[in-house]
Length: 100
Image 1 (cartoon, helix red, strand yellow):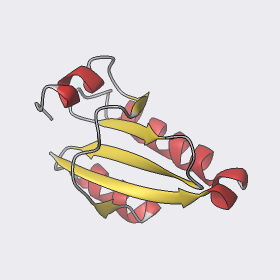
Image 2 (cartoon, one colour; image 1 turned 90 degrees about the vertical axis):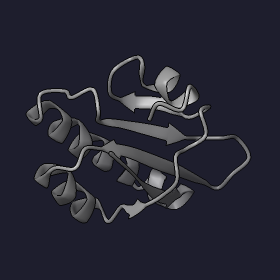
Image 3 (cartoon, rainbow, N blue to C red; image 1 turned 180 degrees about the vertical axis):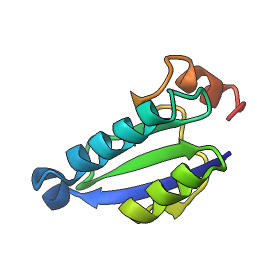
Image 4 (spheres, rainbow, N blue to C red; image 1 turned 90 degrees about the horizontal axis):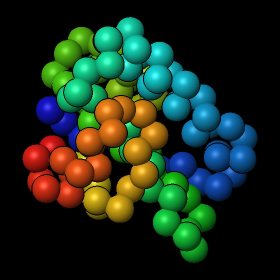
């Protein structure tokens, strides 16, 4: 499994970029039959003029296609305080325990 991220400025968020990426991820997630090893998380910590979208993706062709589509970059594991946007409810707990 691999972590990827995209950082969006407040201008990009206001233009709807975060929502468009969210919809694309949600579509891929459902087409892939909602795998437990796939999630989208959002870092919206107050006081910043940007947000970071994190993607936990399996090593699969559809995941590679999504990464290219949204221009996500490989990254380190996000902080456990991020919000779950798409995925199974246990993702944040698994992240906190260091399992993913």
